[in-house]
Image (tube, rainbow, N blue to C red; front, side, top):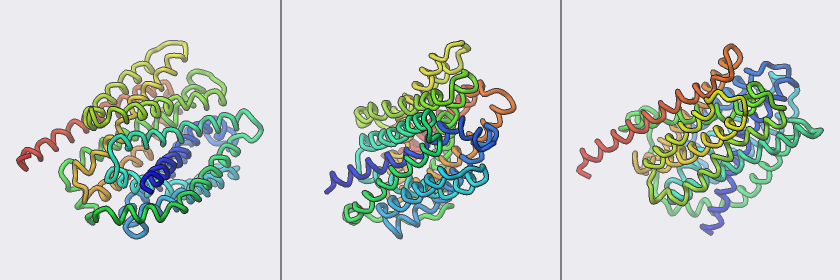
Length: 390
């Protein structure tokens, strides 16, 4: 039964990744059809991410009331319905309205699943599960690229992914008895208010690190295709597929990090990841005419990002206590989606009014913030351990 539940959780992580890369890969064609400027993707992504912030902050309450399994199934169902509705949108304002349920479906499930795995499974599963998120995020650009190259266009890409999500929802609903049994075997979490959560030692550093990481990741995801189209002059369907380069690096990196996570530990893997991100950004920044170096750059940035997110999540029960982890991870998700909400739209303005070629500099800014905050967190946790005589 435990193995079956783990398989379902892996499938759930694929479902988390499926919607995340659709907007960025389809936007070069979508903004033309909808009569919207290229920077308008920022508004849609901001609405989606704002919904995830709200539902992330509600995750602790919802998970206690409904359980992780039901929260996961209902969230995937809501996301699937929103994506199907996206495929029928023909005006930009309707896309913005539908972005609300699109976002609300993501936050609670993300926080609930990540906490569940952090409490019940080893570090390697956290890396591999987020690798499967990358599988979902990797599949979507190819689906969108094929749809753009065919007759269905971007609506066909959204509708196909929506049907995949409906299928995953059905499997999640069938698995509900497994979740209930495993939850009953675990301990009770501690109820914390938002102010109490924010007062925990080191939480502030963790939250800013999550904001910086998510800003870097989301901007890379959403603007890779447009970068190849606007800066490198490639066709939209080719650029949509090249937009998957970041996800390829992310997915392969998480597969590899799962094998070494327990040997190296969360802190060391985060440092290694940040160093690799820096190399990828340098490759993107090289002023060469060929786009082959940009291809390598997005691959390397994705590879460097691979261990950072799962390692920060997995270390949360250790850093702040298992009894506090659900509340802390919910706020972490909210800050992560705040980075997703505000920073890619900000770069949209940079791309429209300055130059999309500034993408590497934009990413470097958040890479520096990520490194500084994770190191300050490590220092604060060392101080706490010393004070407690550990």
